[in-house]
Image 1 (cartoon, one colour):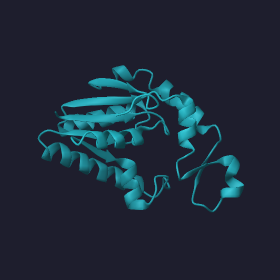
Image 2: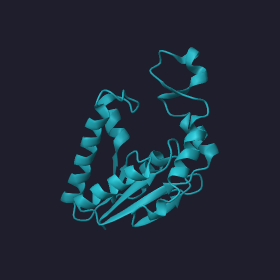
Image 3: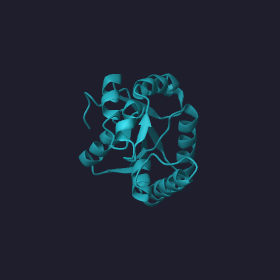
Length: 180
């Protein structure tokens, strides 16, 4: 099967963790992760927006996708990359189609906000702004204490018409109850 799967959901919704478990469960799946590339190249995902590092990682990610699609007759690729807006998803879908992707599936993460709030704060590079004084100097990115809750609401509002965004199929996933 020639298929690319794009996880869609807010930060902390369990996308990357779920995708890694899916790849372990199905050896025919290949995971290409923008975050893993950023970590491999630069040691983290929260980088200066002025450094150009994100663009370098993004180019590397697309090279890996291109190689996988062109060099593998039957592929199933999970492309785990940020796609917060309809326009970003449209650009990704269009680029995948130009590369020859035959089927593009969106895994839309409908993770409950309570789980997102809990999981987001477990990320090793983030901390609450209320902890800034006690945790400064630890190479952390600080977010407002309600950031995951606000992000969850905004993301799902922006993705309210995901069924009409050009995916061949949308699969809704609640990783709290669905295991790959």
